[in-house]
Length: 149
Image (cartoon, rainbow, N blue to C red; front, side, top):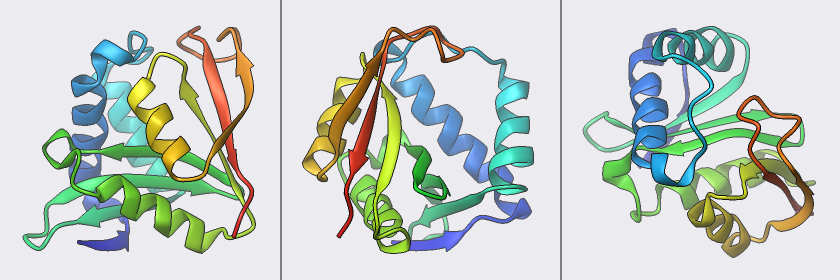
Protein backbone atom coordinates (compact mmCIF):
# COMPACT_ATOMS: atom_id res chain seq x y z
CA UNK A 1 0.00 0.00 0.00
CA UNK A 2 1.34 3.41 -1.01
CA UNK A 3 0.27 6.76 0.45
CA UNK A 4 0.47 9.70 -1.92
CA UNK A 5 -0.86 13.22 -2.14
CA UNK A 6 -4.18 13.44 -3.98
CA UNK A 7 -4.34 15.59 -7.10
CA UNK A 8 -7.19 16.75 -9.30
CA UNK A 9 -6.95 13.61 -11.45
CA UNK A 10 -7.65 11.56 -8.30
CA UNK A 11 -11.04 13.17 -7.68
CA UNK A 12 -13.16 10.29 -9.06
CA UNK A 13 -11.29 7.72 -6.95
CA UNK A 14 -11.41 9.94 -3.85
CA UNK A 15 -15.15 10.51 -4.33
CA UNK A 16 -15.67 6.74 -4.66
CA UNK A 17 -13.89 6.14 -1.33
CA UNK A 18 -15.71 9.00 0.41
CA UNK A 19 -19.20 8.03 -0.79
CA UNK A 20 -18.64 4.27 -0.56
CA UNK A 21 -17.44 4.41 3.01
CA UNK A 22 -20.26 6.67 4.15
CA UNK A 23 -22.86 4.53 2.39
CA UNK A 24 -21.51 1.30 3.89
CA UNK A 25 -21.47 2.85 7.38
CA UNK A 26 -24.95 4.38 7.03
CA UNK A 27 -26.31 2.32 9.90
CA UNK A 28 -23.83 4.03 12.24
CA UNK A 29 -23.99 7.55 10.85
CA UNK A 30 -26.66 10.23 10.89
CA UNK A 31 -28.48 10.88 7.64
CA UNK A 32 -26.35 12.61 5.04
CA UNK A 33 -26.62 16.37 5.11
CA UNK A 34 -25.55 16.71 1.47
CA UNK A 35 -26.52 15.42 -1.91
CA UNK A 36 -24.20 13.25 -3.96
CA UNK A 37 -23.37 16.25 -6.17
CA UNK A 38 -22.52 18.36 -3.12
CA UNK A 39 -20.28 15.59 -1.78
CA UNK A 40 -18.49 15.40 -5.14
CA UNK A 41 -17.91 19.15 -5.15
CA UNK A 42 -16.66 19.02 -1.56
CA UNK A 43 -14.12 16.28 -2.33
CA UNK A 44 -13.03 17.84 -5.63
CA UNK A 45 -13.21 21.54 -4.78
CA UNK A 46 -12.30 21.59 -1.10
CA UNK A 47 -10.46 18.46 0.03
CA UNK A 48 -8.29 18.07 -3.06
CA UNK A 49 -8.11 21.61 -4.45
CA UNK A 50 -7.65 23.44 -1.15
CA UNK A 51 -6.67 20.86 1.45
CA UNK A 52 -3.89 18.50 2.33
CA UNK A 53 -5.43 15.25 1.14
CA UNK A 54 -3.77 11.88 0.80
CA UNK A 55 -4.81 8.60 -0.79
CA UNK A 56 -3.82 5.09 0.23
CA UNK A 57 -3.41 3.23 -3.05
CA UNK A 58 -3.05 -0.54 -3.45
CA UNK A 59 -0.58 -2.31 -5.74
CA UNK A 60 -3.05 -2.12 -8.64
CA UNK A 61 -3.38 1.66 -8.27
CA UNK A 62 -6.87 1.45 -6.72
CA UNK A 63 -7.68 4.00 -4.01
CA UNK A 64 -8.29 2.21 -0.71
CA UNK A 65 -8.45 5.15 1.68
CA UNK A 66 -8.62 8.92 1.98
CA UNK A 67 -7.05 11.20 4.61
CA UNK A 68 -7.49 14.95 4.76
CA UNK A 69 -5.51 17.06 7.23
CA UNK A 70 -5.29 20.64 8.38
CA UNK A 71 -2.88 21.92 11.03
CA UNK A 72 -3.49 19.84 14.15
CA UNK A 73 -6.55 18.07 12.74
CA UNK A 74 -7.65 14.95 10.92
CA UNK A 75 -10.51 16.49 8.97
CA UNK A 76 -11.55 13.38 7.05
CA UNK A 77 -10.58 9.71 7.18
CA UNK A 78 -12.40 7.18 5.03
CA UNK A 79 -11.55 3.65 3.96
CA UNK A 80 -13.27 1.98 1.01
CA UNK A 81 -15.51 -0.80 2.41
CA UNK A 82 -13.71 -3.54 0.50
CA UNK A 83 -10.54 -2.61 2.44
CA UNK A 84 -12.10 -2.47 5.92
CA UNK A 85 -10.14 -4.53 8.43
CA UNK A 86 -7.02 -4.66 6.25
CA UNK A 87 -4.90 -2.02 7.98
CA UNK A 88 -5.58 0.90 5.63
CA UNK A 89 -6.98 3.12 8.36
CA UNK A 90 -4.03 2.30 10.60
CA UNK A 91 -1.66 3.20 7.79
CA UNK A 92 -3.42 6.54 7.22
CA UNK A 93 -3.48 7.43 10.94
CA UNK A 94 0.22 6.59 11.13
CA UNK A 95 0.85 8.89 8.18
CA UNK A 96 -1.11 11.69 9.88
CA UNK A 97 0.88 11.23 13.09
CA UNK A 98 4.17 11.27 11.20
CA UNK A 99 3.20 14.53 9.47
CA UNK A 100 1.93 16.15 12.66
CA UNK A 101 3.88 14.57 15.55
CA UNK A 102 2.96 17.30 18.03
CA UNK A 103 -0.64 16.09 18.19
CA UNK A 104 -3.91 15.73 16.37
CA UNK A 105 -7.61 16.18 17.00
CA UNK A 106 -10.69 14.94 15.18
CA UNK A 107 -14.45 14.72 15.46
CA UNK A 108 -16.49 11.57 15.05
CA UNK A 109 -20.16 10.89 15.58
CA UNK A 110 -21.08 9.37 18.93
CA UNK A 111 -23.07 6.70 17.07
CA UNK A 112 -20.04 5.55 15.07
CA UNK A 113 -18.81 2.98 17.58
CA UNK A 114 -16.39 1.37 15.12
CA UNK A 115 -14.62 4.67 14.48
CA UNK A 116 -14.52 5.43 18.19
CA UNK A 117 -12.89 2.06 18.98
CA UNK A 118 -10.48 2.53 16.08
CA UNK A 119 -9.28 5.94 17.26
CA UNK A 120 -9.03 4.81 20.88
CA UNK A 121 -6.84 1.85 19.79
CA UNK A 122 -4.58 4.39 18.11
CA UNK A 123 -4.07 6.51 21.22
CA UNK A 124 -6.82 9.10 20.80
CA UNK A 125 -8.75 10.11 23.92
CA UNK A 126 -12.25 11.61 24.07
CA UNK A 127 -11.91 15.20 25.29
CA UNK A 128 -15.27 16.78 24.40
CA UNK A 129 -18.82 15.66 23.70
CA UNK A 130 -21.59 17.70 22.11
CA UNK A 131 -25.29 17.30 21.46
CA UNK A 132 -24.66 17.93 17.75
CA UNK A 133 -26.08 21.45 17.67
CA UNK A 134 -22.85 22.65 16.03
CA UNK A 135 -22.66 20.15 13.15
CA UNK A 136 -24.63 19.95 9.92
CA UNK A 137 -26.16 16.58 10.77
CA UNK A 138 -27.34 17.78 14.21
CA UNK A 139 -26.04 14.52 15.67
CA UNK A 140 -24.11 14.08 18.93
CA UNK A 141 -20.38 13.93 18.33
CA UNK A 142 -17.10 13.49 20.17
CA UNK A 143 -13.82 15.34 19.80
CA UNK A 144 -10.81 13.07 20.19
CA UNK A 145 -7.22 14.17 20.75
CA UNK A 146 -3.85 12.47 20.40
CA UNK A 147 -1.21 14.33 22.40
CA UNK A 148 1.68 13.54 20.08
CA UNK A 149 4.76 11.42 19.96
